[in-house]
Length: 140
Length: 140
Length: 140
Image (cartoon, rainbow over all chains, first blue to last red; front, side, top):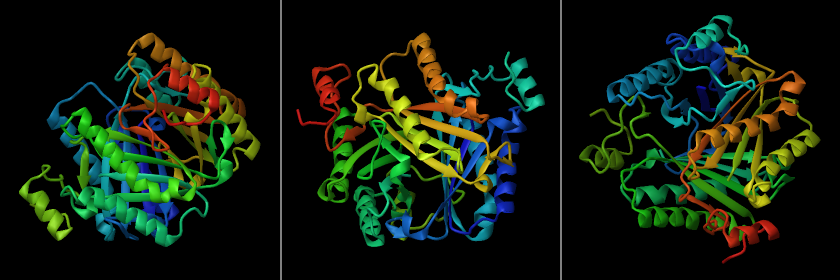
């Protein structure tokens, strides 16, 4: 967690584009202290004949689904700011290329998540900081 | 939103079938006033060797995942009717072709969703009606 | 339900591996009385240039997303044990092959789910037992 699914038109992104996009996504989370390896991004190329918006085939839409762990904060202002930050990261890969884009974030239960057979440490804990520093899920 | 993922056997649908299916899906939502462009449908062809039901490969199953915004109504009767309406739309593309089908709807947070860099207008608002009429997310 | 999405590197699994993995997944649920056909597993092969962890392409990560019906029990101990059981099933297909793995479980609403046009019977009901015995969603 987080997990990003990026559904995009055929040929919309070069390998370099995808790497750049994935790095920009990753920075959102490492900036707030999460380990790099928490951030997974999957690019799914969808052909125009399988990608529909409003019932019509589309070759210029990017649909992003983001899965986050449900955090404790329910502060509406912070949730808004976070969502806008995600949108900002997408702009160079969508709006600036003339592509339409839409995304939503789902929140999934914190207690039903494991990495490499381990329970991820508490948010902000010393162990989480160690994982972030070493970029590895070391047993604790 | 809504977002439909349709996982289907190889060759189950022609391009025309997919377009028809996507249009039928779209009508569910435009009939209740949502803009056409809110409705995204993605068809994912899954080969028999990657599609398992009960631990056995399947070449005749359609598995649909629908993502909805969590609306305020929790009325059990309305939820039931809505789910049955979705099922009815699938019948010509599943049951009537001898395909097994299963679907579920997930509900995701309303406040973590943006389209083309904009916050979607309130449900039933004048702006939503404008978006529906123009079939475009115009700034407001 | 349950639905497993297994995002894996190209060539990580043979057809036999996938079948074995899907059967092991299925047993988790049939052991607690669910019908075999409730369990759907989809394998999604993701090329290294589309699979990123921490902003870097990865060719040795398996990311699993599991979708469960939200059950009534919220017992933290049972949820923990269930999650660890899922992890255990993945080990021969991840850790034991030198692959990194991560998974999370999402919980979706029980009342927004249908199989073959039918409402699944109540958990533990006689009808559910019939469905399990016959491995078929017979009308009731």
